[in-house]
Length: 203
Image (spheres, rainbow, N blue to C red):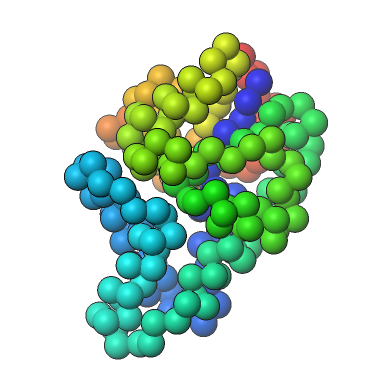
C-alpha cells in the first residue's frame, strides 16, 4: 500500500519569516494560479521558476526588493507537528511525495526537516510537465505503481478533486475545517491529523 503525500500546505506550513502575511498569502495564490495557467496553455516552467516569477511580480507591485534568499526559504519551511507520525506510517506503508515542487527543492525541504528517510521516492510534476490538478500527474503516478493500491493524502481541496477525477483514492487532511470541494467527488476518507491514518481501514 502506498501513501502519496502532497507537500506544500499538507506536510509543511506556508510561513516565511520577515515577509508580511498578506504578501505571503498572495505569493502562494499566484504560485498556484500560475501553475494552472501554464498547464492550461500547455507550456512548461518549473515550480521554482514560477515561484521566482511570482515574487518578482509582487516586489514590483508592493515596492520591496527582490531577494534570492526568500526563494530559499521554501526549502526551510516548518513541518506541522503531526508530521512526526510519518516515522510510524513508513513502517506500515510505502511513503511517496506527489508534488508540484521540483525534485531538487522538495528533496532539500524534506532533508532540512529531517524526514527524507521516511520517503521511498519523490514524484514531481516535472516528470509529466503538467501541474495538479491535471489528471496526467496522478495517472502517471498510478501507472508507475500499477498493481499497487495508492492513496493521495492532501490538505488542498483542488488536489483531492484532481486525484478523484483521475480515479485515485484520496485522504483529505482537512487541517482548516474547510468544506469539501463542490466540484469534486467526496474523498474516500477525511481526517484532521496524520495520526488518524493508522485507524483507517485502507483497502
